[in-house]
Length: 127
Image 1 (cartoon, rainbow, N blue to C red):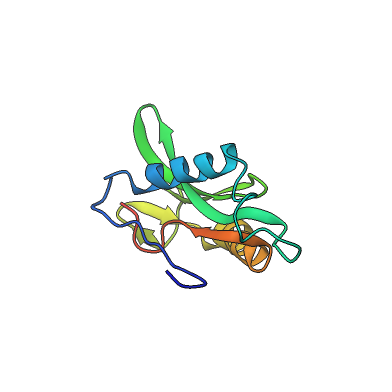
Image 2: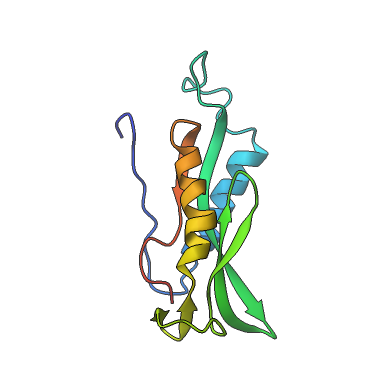
């Protein structure tokens, strides 16, 4: 796959891509990551996995929005919600770019050079 492989999870809206990604993240963290692999060594990054993932916000059984989550710190920011009053809207969700800048961008930037695996969830439209 090369030195820095890129793996994409694709599928139709609501087909479970983010759920699959979260299961992979959980499996890596539960198994102790890649500590025994040849990637670990004296110059190995400090963390196994970092970046940002997306979490669905459900209210009263209805999908109301999305939060971006820093995988390393657990910090969350509501980046899209039906009740956000914004001229930036996608499929009925108001977008708050400041939350993406506050949580998502630092999560990605902090993982560069500090993590063996960088995760970026939701790089396209979310539905």
